Structures are given as C-alpha cells and as structure tokens.
Length: 500
Image (tube, rainbow, N blue to C red; front, side):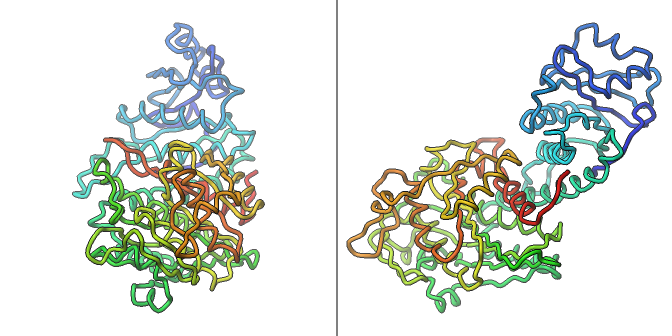
C-alpha cells in the first residue's frame, strides 16, 4: 500500500472513497462544507437525519453523492475540534481503518489536513501514516499463510494549502522510514526462539551492512573474541545454552555529519530467557522470546537512520545471548569478573540482562561515545511501578534526560524518570565481590539501573526499561515496536530537522 501527497479538488477525485472529518454536535469540517456545496446541500440533508453526531467513533457512509466523482464519502466523528491531539487522532484513524477493512475499495483520499496538530501539518501527516500502518500490521505466520485483510492499494493525503505540500512530503518520507523501522523491530521480536537465536540476530545485523553498504559496517564478536576481551559476565549468561552468544557491533556513518558526536545504542538481546538456574515459573514463559525486544528496537533504529541518511555517527550493539539451565550454566553464588575488572556476586541468574549489558557498555568505551542509550526489557519491577503504558527512564545526565522527554512528548511514547539516589546503591552491597547483581528485593528497577550505572562513568548515559511496554500478551498480542519511534525522533532532533 502506497501513500501520496496531493492538493486535491475533492469533487473531481475519481476514487473509491473520500474520508472527511465531522466534529461534535455535527460541526462541519471545511472538507464537508466544500463537498456539500458541490452536491447542492445533499450531504447536509443526510446529516440532519441524525445518523451521526460527530463524536469519536461515529461514522456515516454516503453513496452516489450528486456532483461528486468519488463512489463513497465516509464521514468519521472526531469529537470537539479544539481538543484533537495526537492521541485522539490515532484513535480516529484506527476507527477509520476498521471501517475501510470492510469495504471493497482500492484507493482512498484522506482529507484531514485541517486537523493540524499544534497547527503543524508535519505531525498531522506523520500521525496519519504511522497510525494507519500500525492498524494494518499483522504478526507474520511462520508458514507465510497470512491472509490480506484489506484491499487498499494507495491512500492519498489531501493537503488543502499548497504552501504545506513541501513539509507534508518531508513528513511522509520520515513516517515511512519510521514505520519500516517499527515493523522490522516487530517482525524480529515476534519470531519464535528456535528461529531467532543469537546467531540469527548477528546475521540480521550483517544483512544491514549489505543493504546499506555505503553507511553501515558490522563486526560480529563471537565467544572466542569475548574471552579475549575479558567479557566473562556476558559469557557466563550464555554458558548453559546450546546457542552460544554473539554480540553485533553496527557502525553507521551518515554523509556530511553535522558534528563530531558519536551516539551509541545498546539493545538487550536475550533471545530466550528461562531464568537459568533461578528458573522462571512455567506460566507465560513462552513470552520470554520477547526478552530481545531491546536489540530489535536498536535494529529498527539503524534502519531508519540509513533510510533517511541521517547526518550522524552512530554505534549500535545488539547484545545477543540465551539464558538456559544446564551443566555449564552459571549459578547463584558465583562471582564474575566483568570486562571493566569489577566483580559481581550472582544472587539470581534471572537478573541476567544487566550481566550482558554491563560488558557491552564497557566495550563501547573504545568508541569514545558522547551519548549512550541502552534499551532493555530489564525488570518486572518496572512493570509493577509503571504498568504497561509507560517505560522507565534513568540517566546520569540531565540534558540527555530532557532530550528524551522531548522526543517522548512529540511521539506520545510515554516515559517516566526514576531516581538513582545514593541510598539505592547500598542495596547492591556484597561481602565477597564489588557488588551483587540484585538488590534486597525492593525498588528492583532502580537497583538494576544503579548496577548498569557503575559501567557508564565515561559518557552521558540513559537507560530505558521497556519490560512493560515492549509487547502485549494474549491471542492478539505481540511486540509493540516501542520505543522505536521515540528514539527515531530523538535522532531526528539530533539531526536538526525542521518540521514547520
């Protein structure tokens, strides 16, 4: 399905359907006023029958409208005109797609340009494209028997003001690249663990270097190289698994880099987490294939950067590993020496993600990054604290934290800052090692972040705990693709893109 930007003469558009907004208490949009005039009042005569009120969720399909070339006009309720924001617009578009799925149509015109979010056509276009794509996304079946449930070949976005066409086209370009990133992350995350293992992750990284060979170089760190580097913490987590760990280092360099900064991302890539010796309960253990959603997010972010040729320098690490019980598995009570030289007493082998990430964070020091952001489905405690709608944010730099909050507000991907007070570090005290891998049972998301912070002294760092937001459970669940759009927006902001 393709999208097009156009300044339409709505009554002359030979299309299967024109979608137009109507507001609360039947307040007419500019598009309806124009089409009603072209139909000599036919549309308003039907509205007056009372079949639609304009509330969000309302709909009315009109056929064979006099003076209009389109076969149908779909009126969708948008609520109060002055209260429409990104969240409302997403809901409106999701309702629209549900209706369009039931209609045998090939092409559609969306005439929503008067719904400017903050008087900015950029965000209106981007929200429309991403929300439409999200509504149409389906988890791919392994046997490739997915049934196409919508017949739409293309959607035209009517931009009512010609002066807005340029920024609308930029928005469309961004939206398609971000959607590609989100869909790629979802597709990777949704794969079963017998397919998507650490080696598979590394092969996905290699494919990026082939597709974007002008911008991306990939280095794969196998277990032999990890031993040479002293990554004993990372190795220990994978010792019990048949599928050995692989760390993928993806180096992206855009053309005409705007500054000398290096931005780095680290994604937790536990392609399956049984908990190891501290084994998890059987209930919903199959969902532990999603413990690599952080790595999948980083993979998606690099796709967006390469698609848009962002003028940035980025280092990305996919920390691929598998945590399984076995004769060679690491144990509670073991003391591990990390790549940094610091020692860790293992109290719980199900707190493995931080043991993989800490060596990845230390490895990054060789690139002298200015900004490092790790993304991880790290703690159930974060789900308890923030639920399934908000990701946890921790940082050692206020400016970086502020930049991430800005991107969160812009995209609607919610995050919440949690503290790294000195009192929490005491929870990690150990009488046999420099510190332990878990705290005393309270504030688990915070103590996990405190653990990671011990390996981030040489750069500005942020940690996103996405344990509650990375996937949804149930029959119609699956990976959400979060926080890909948030971090794509962060990179767009770093690139100094102008949206209006």
